[in-house]
Length: 242
Picture 1 (tube, rainbow, N blue to C red):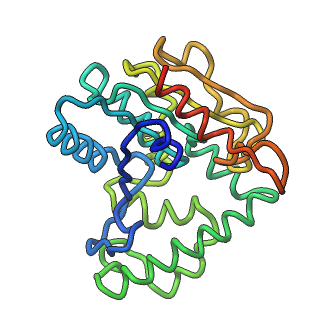
Picture 2: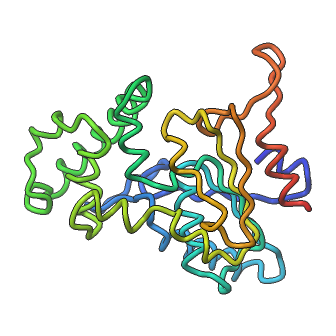
């Protein structure tokens, strides 16, 4: 946002439900394919600033959601350009990758937060009836897949994690995108494998795929520890300005 401001852009941030200071008071939460809130958010900004061009930048889960939204909206999109950074474009592959090797450490940390919020849901709602799952068994959710299969999928109307992953992975929506979009992805992203990288036939003419060898997950920092160069932010602004 600082880099955008330095280049003449005003910016505003949308948090997913429950990801900001305010607690989400409903049993449901958010997920990788929940485009409804983002669409409402974009429409409200367009209504307030009808003469301004709108751009979108999404990171990780938000990047997957944003690409899916563009594919759903097609020519109706209110956004002029979009950048998607490290989107998990095939959710099933990403869930599997996070349960292997060093990525399991990230999974462990992420699950700690997710299970904390799920405990809070149980404190305020009859989640056992909604999910057919006991509060005492939350501690047994030791993978992203199990968490999604137990909570994310059923609370949002999916039969299983497999159905959720199938319907919400953005890769299948890329060919329908009619808005100029830049996808920035690194081959060494610990949350994914090279399988998630789309082929040319998966992309519409409006989608540009920028692949790097290094960059991790939403990293992309050059230079060294003492003099880092934040390449990603400059790349995003460059695309939006051209």
